Length: 409
Image (cartoon, rainbow, N blue to C red; front, top):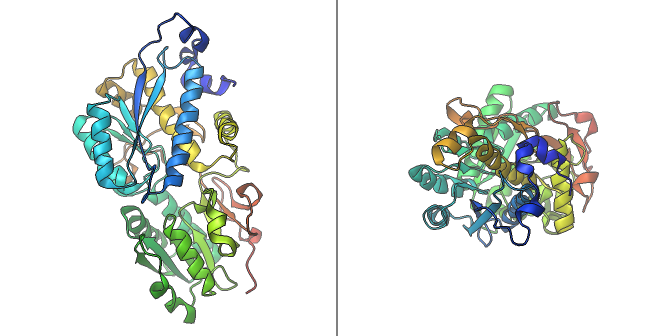
């Protein structure tokens, strides 16, 4: 495996010979323990947890193969939260007090991140939030919490701009009853008021544990909106999508279906939605046709070699989460909390998706990488790979309606 990209990201000092470091008869330096909280069992999203785990392991191997951080290997200590706040709190407590980790990362569900970061705050331990989109995470203003992943206001801006470009007049969002779902649905509404106040908007809150969403869906048959926005995660999102499609509402010649949750790169997406996914417009944080730094390609290739699967957004988000910690340890020359938190706040490096820095503005921008690249793409056939989908909005460019396909039904 080449180490050119990681050299650029972390500096040549990280690349002391791994063969010397771990050679027989040579005592390896103490590992740098990084705590990881992810979902590995229901009711949370196990698929997301697996993708995050893979991304962290790929980046850890790249760093360790290059000699670690000043000769110290990265060691991931993983705890299953089941996506539950109470489990997340217990996991972070254990990782800090028993496993003696120097930082926490990996969390990919907002409610779990909001719970776990409170423990990290109490112990003054750095917490790098991988995928908790809720702006409530940033609005806490905790010095210990850093966000290299996506955030609700970013999606809200993208969704509002897309609805405006589509010429929608009436929009309905279906949001799961979590901090993430309700928070993003509200943000979309606020962004629509800013960008397109003429659009009529409302959202319906749905129980993510339910399997019957028809009471909220059926009223739309008589008067379909111009667009439906999904703000739900699997498996509930799949059930809702199928029921909306079975009722002939969307995707259709009348109604666009816009996914604000990045469903299309889930490995089980097509086996669960079939025809309901044809025509779907997807907010995405990764597309094979988008430009990406050299390190992104390196990580993607390593992931494919490891799993035989195509890269996905969570792979890169997780890899970058670990990368910023390793970079901070390298620059701080320490794993002490104060030094590490200070170094994280001064982050400026090219990761798998672009150059990352953390803003210090109050509110949802606090300790957030603001310029997270995103795309919009459309699925135009059943079982279509993301790589074969139509890229209708590239990073930094507006959505191009001329590239869109619409069902004739």
